[in-house]
Image (cartoon, rainbow, N blue to C red; front, side, top):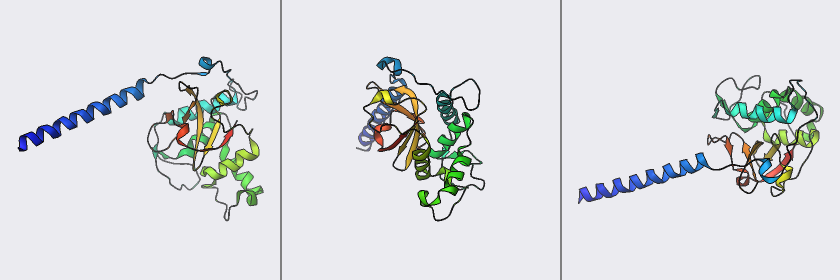
Length: 210
């Protein structure tokens, strides 16, 4: 009787392993698409702020990509000086890294805007060590300083790599990849260690900027 139970357990274990392997293979080899597959033009910024020969939109996209390639671990921590000093990070760290690659110091920009417009940010106590890493502060900053675009994901032509997408309690950068319906992938850090995902519909979009 015990042998039968053991065989059944082993069989179930093997089936589960096979299912997991199939799911992993599907996710690894899932076909992705790009703008050209949907006759969407690639938009480039007219600005090259850091004068590296690469436009700002592309620089921002590549900065986000370079950051997630380091495979940061996820943990919300407070750092004196603001910037993470270890291998940990959160979703907002993708954003300032992306902007840094284009030559912008997003921390300084947000700190200055908060200092000059404290009432708009609804902050009781200003803290430069963390303010630039809060999703709500980033949304307010982009509402005030970036081009506001549609939140309707079905308008696929209006989403380009390097765009900033704000969700409820999360934030990401649009990737160059798209799914079969033209919906863009996102570059983000959510703690599940899938940094580039077909996951935009998992969240509620509350802001889209360029």
